[in-house]
Length: 152
Image (tube, rainbow, N blue to C red):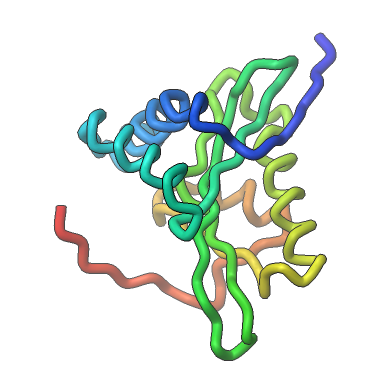
C-alpha cells in the first residue's frame, strides 16, 4: 500500500478527532481518563484564540491519523518564542509510517526559519517507545527535568 502523507494546519472541523486523540493518548500513556466534554471544549478554545496555540494534523491517503498542539513559551534568553509540542497522538494502526516525523519536520522548518528558538516537548518517564522516537529525530532529554504541581 503506498502512503501519501500530508501535514496541514488543523481546522475547527478537526476538533472532534483531536479531542478523541487527546482522550486516547491520556488513557494509553498515563492510564488517565479525561472528561470528554472538557477536552472538546479545551480543543475548541484553541481555535478561538491563536495565542493559546495551534494544531496541526497528519493525513495518510486523505484520512486524518494524527495531531499535535504547538504552544509557545517566551524565552528572554533568546528573545523569541520556543515551541512546545503537546497533545501528540497518532492512531496506533498508522504508527511507524512517518506521520509524526512529517509533523515534526514542519515544526523543525519553522525553527530553522528563525520563527522559534527551538522545540521542546515533555514525555511521561515510562513512555520509552516515544522517547526512542524523539531521540531518532535528534531530540534529547538530557538538559532539563520538568517539575509540576497540577490541580487535577
